[in-house]
Amino acid sequence: MQRKFDLSLVIPTYNEKENISNLIKKIQNEFEKNEILGEIIVVDDNSPDGTGIILDNLKKKEKNIKVIHRTGKLGLSSAVLEGWKISEGNVLGVMDADLSHPPEKIKELFFPIKRNEVDFTIGSRYINGGKIEGWNFKRRLMSKTATLFARVYTKVKDPMTGFFLIKKECIQDVKLDPKGFKILLEVIIKGKYSTVREIPITFVNRVKGKSKAGAKEIIYYLRNLAGYLPYKKNVIYEFFKFAFVGGIGTLINILILYYLTEKVGVYYLFSAIISFIIAMTSNFFLNKIWTFKENVPSNIAKKYVQFSLVSLGALLINLFFLYFFTEIIGIYYLFSQILAIGIALIINFFGNKIWTFSK
Image (tube, rainbow, N blue to C red):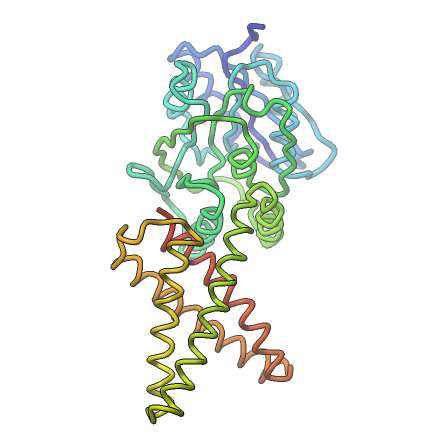
């Protein structure tokens, strides 16, 4: 059945009275200029600054604007889902209300989908041509770290952006239940699409109003990441294979250390270095061939260096947490070592999956 609109663009709002009118004007100009039959669905979380009143006035003047008023601050992701529920477009989209996302890029995200070139387009800050303006070091670090963690699940360069479009059919009958700000990763993991394209955008930090990001959103994000594991059972399978290889490496390390020290007479610190290198090399080849199923010759020198650096980093993390649990918290050192090994193992696995064996 043909829908009334080609595009339904959802904009979640909370205290955006200084930005929302300007944003909607820019979007309407893009719709008109590019002959896009689009609707704008604004979902407001009972903004105390009067955003809802402004939206109601705009709605009276513009036939393609819908407004949902919610009872409280219920979160960005749930706002997007509520907006999509009443959408009439063949293509669904999301963008921020604070003018951080460039409305002039709507056409570049929309037309590849309309022409059936792709199912899914993403406004990306982290591909060639994309950039971020106005962020401090802390915001950049948080964004990069979150993006790095998401690489476990997807090859998309910017799975944390809030600006994307997708065919409605790709998420029909899909149960989406993200918490916090980041809905895109949920759609990437659960959506029923075949092709995705990232379009470079310039993200401009908000000029007016306050950012809603905080520690609570970080907790939600980490919970979401853990909750996605059942959708990527291969990641769990790889982790246990990686851990098994690590066990073999530990055994190799101990046996060579014992042999060189006790039988050959090598000074034990030199034996430890040699045994560590041999065990790490064994781990590298077993993980390359068995855990991550790569051909041995594929970038072998580069990947060996990467694997070594991650392994050394994991070793330092192991030592740090061993000291922390033992000296600071007061846990018996053997139990501390077990906890430290577990933490280092997780970091070692994700570091190598994301960096060394990302293909």
